[in-house]
Amino acid sequence: MLCVFQLHPDLPSRADMFRRASSLVFGQAVRHASLDSSNFVLERSLNRVQLLGRVGQDPVMRQVDGRSPVTIFSMATNEMWRSSEPQEGSTGGPGEMSQKTTWHRVSVFKPGLRDLAYSYIKKGARILVEGKLDYGEYVDKNQVRRQATTIIADNIVFLSDNERDRA
Image: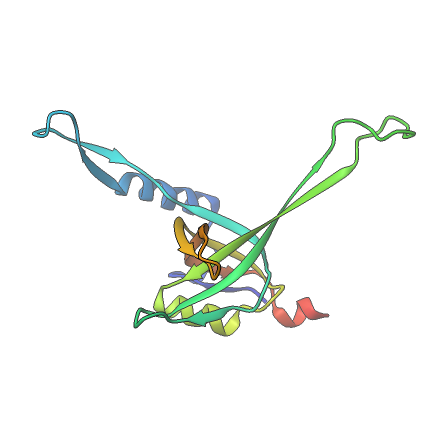
């Protein structure tokens, strides 16, 4: 079962995703003052992330100091490669397979998407998250200043049926 929660019911084609990304690049203009304050220069910028992976924990919903609630969950992405040098004693074939797992913190603020994510995303589900990177600082319980990188999701595509994944 494939569930897609976005504006149109079909999965976007690569061309559609490219057009969407291009429109984001060309649609975002940032003004900044040049050395001569009477001239303004338009600069384009883009902060866009796509992650395809598995959910590491069931989402939690938090609300702090009267702000809008946020759904938060972790997500793992894997990178695999084969080392270029063969192992000792091998017959000259390719090297050993290696894998690196990277964990990401995902926050969902968008009201409809936030509630869907909280209700339907479960640990182990395979999803595609689109959003932007956000860097922030916080002070932990030991009064140590820490930095955190978060993906602010604005689109989530559900790629697996949780019942099937449990089997």
